[in-house]
Image (tube, rainbow, N blue to C red; front, side, top):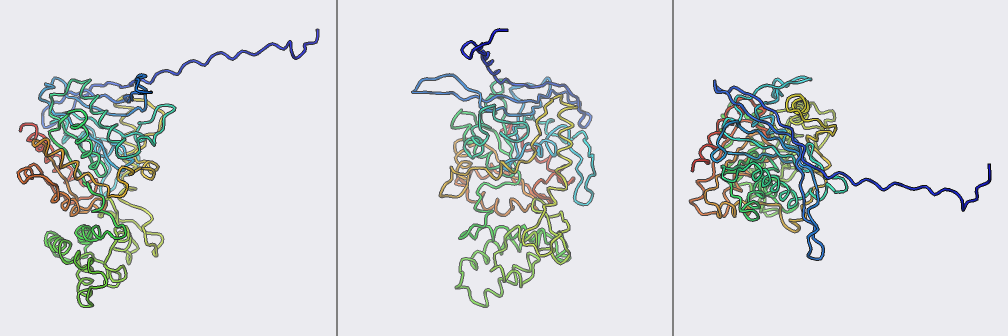
Length: 496
């Protein structure tokens, strides 16, 4: 065989790479029936990801719309209903970093998780049941998972962090809503959005964005476990608001755990609210100017209301931070109480900890919600994916950007007020849980009282209180009553 010199070596030819397939929607449609109080509901479910695109402009010239993210949603529409009169509710949770699974499988949807409650938590492998209280009986439903939660992801080559901030998140959720309304010809339907926790910040922001950017006006907003101004639930240096506004929640949790004896909870809350609105803010504002007698009296009252010792209240300088409270309240019993729901308790392995090592109101129910949804989406709604369904992403939570609020508090109070002033027909429902240690009810009341709206619009605000926590529907009597309250709200707001 003749020698081959380097110059004669055959050149390897690399075939050109095939262009990547353009992302497309992958919605799966299924049909179902549910019986609600002898009424048969035939409905269609759609589950899958819709592609969000953004126009690329270079030197003022459009270069088309580029796919940026794929957002997962689950939609339920009642068969045979008149689209022009049939309400539609868009729903999401909060975090930031939470999927929509909580409201979807806990309260609104046609199927619900059997998670149990504080006195009888469900055991693995958990279960599902029909939800005869579903809001589908009164409204079509669309559940949206923000980017990097659920099955929502940026497309290849794009960054999830581009959506992990206040404005980008609102624009993305608003675009999903606009697309769904347009593609399903629902511009003349009564329209609602529901948010829970950080989702209430998102809901107020989305409502204002839809009005201003797309002229899409809503009939109502459902704020569940509301926090519209983070300063009211915060404990930053120099901000004493949270220390006062949390006191009624502390009192409620202390009462639940038997630290107020036989006193009716309404009496306890009335005293706590009065103290939190008057004496405590005054005492905190006095600082070192507070007299010894006034300090002694304030310590005694605060300790009595919260169930903490006077010694502890004095040591923390009248400022009881919430995670410290959950860790301290039942320390003598070796227990901590839940932040999301103060009814829950768990054994604390380190009795000297300042901050609890686990939130039992999350760890006791997240397994049930995760298992139920992963089964339901595949086995009943027919959507298949090997991606992990991100129920609650701490990576998103930790990386969330509040750069839009640099130098000021994170607040959408003005956004909500602006939306209400521009749309005087906009109705707002606010749901409070007395044992919610994440978004204290008295802080939410404080915010509502400071909305800059004319007096006649205050009748547009509807409130409801429940003996439950953050995910208040975990408490079965609350779930049933709350479903009735929300159904009435949607019906009334749709017919104004």
